[in-house]
Length: 108
Image (cartoon, rainbow, N blue to C red; front, side):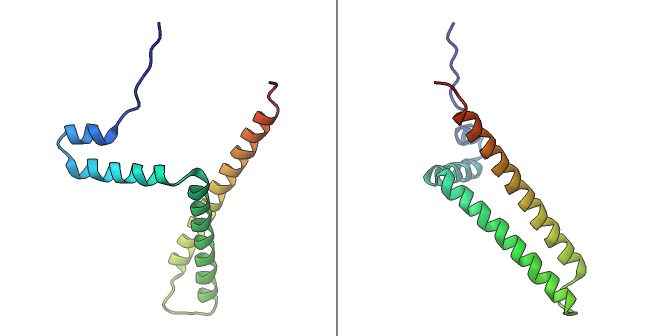
């Protein structure tokens, strides 16, 4: 018995459920995701991690210089966001290296 499943079309399901705005947003986001490849998506993610780290560093410097417009709480949140982003990027990198190693060790 050969059972094949069609991919679920969330935009179509949302349109049938009477949510045209959701269907339109989903369709636009999937088209944008399909237009960009993995390399562009990964590069954008790394850029956003780098920007978060730079922002956290800038805020740390401002707190050290006693700038009254930057609070310690905002700085700590920015530092945590940067750390979480970096840890996520590191995990993705580790998984990619692991997958590459597994593919290279496959016997053909």
